[in-house]
Image (tube, rainbow, N blue to C red; front, side, top):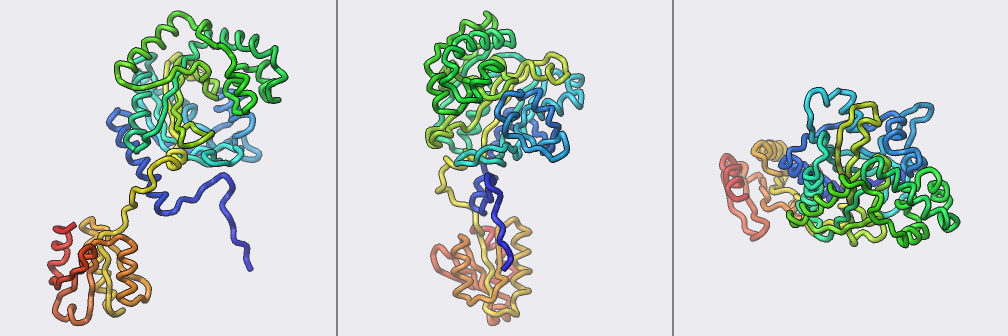
Length: 414
């Protein structure tokens, strides 16, 4: 017997109901992006490895452990979207054409993580990037946009956490102060973090190891590393979020896991997910464009994880089935049934007909299972009279209708 293959661990195959839910999330998100003025771009799954090493950071988990690399090539499957959007922005010299852009994107990302609930090797991001402004008003828009999408798709339980890392100089001072605080307890951290304390102390704060998280929670981080401009920017943002009625929690331990972040960072969590509780995150990356060879241009963005959203959304929402089923009493009426089916589809009506040899009773059961409101029954006697029987599945009543009138009759009832 031939081998039956299974899906790759860390990937998921969506059934029709799950695919419908997935597509609804994407559809509703795109509508919100459109309202906020974000234009969608589609980018390839493959990128040069160096793009992410330079932007995300050599000591991040993504670069050290998680990138899927094409054997023998300096090519990887994209692990995240922001660096890729900036690559597109610079490659096409968009900064020479306009001083401000708002982009959105939807698509799969890939990370070689240890698969578990809410953490896959292939997953999908809904993301946005606003390029060209350092205004705290734009910070507020990005945060508002991400929360609005979650509201629209039906995420009721969520928490917004915000922080600021300060500018690049502030981050250097932050790293120095953090290193002093961590070095004395170095042995209490995992092997990765013991190395990070020397190379990149900020990554220690983002470690998911339980022991490391407990140690980090005892640190008094504060805002002493912030310059006056960055402190003012963050204070202005918080006042504005209050004015807009957006609830948030100030979380000084929030740094995010990518090196390109500066200034405002935020994360959205849901207690419905358990330990893997992040459903979205974002922040400013004011130095990234220059780091990748472009001019000094500020930017901010975020991404939401589609698979994690699917885990917490209400599963009771019914998937659209069909509105009409065309049944035949005899197989020699299949041609007429298919013609009527095509007519109804031409009117935008969700309709199906049978392709298996089933009794009329079996066809009616199938139509009920698919959620059909009406069943058109074609029998020899009715066809001889240029008629069909139209059965209302809700009331279990039926009436004889002329074939040339049945399409309009159905359209008026649906």
